[in-house]
Amino acid sequence: MAVADQPVIAGTALAAGHDGRSEVVLELVYPNGARTQLSVTEEAMTRALDAAGVQRLEDLHGQPWTVLIDPDEMGAL
Image (cartoon, rainbow, N blue to C red; front, side, top):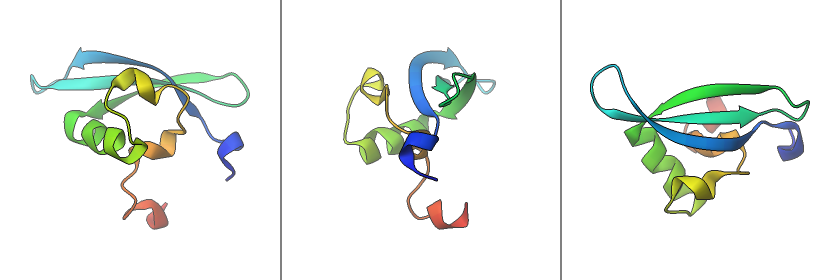
């Protein structure tokens, strides 16, 4: 799938997780305009920020959703 065909991160917000730890809720937007939300754990978000080379959640806006996937696991998708 080409990057232009993938959903991108359109928004980020902090939220309380069911276990009392913080999570990040991402809004993804698809090329056709459809939107969805995804909750991401703190650990996964830290990896995503590192993989994207950014330090702030806001800097993920416009990044492809695949930045959330561990590069070692990408081949399994």
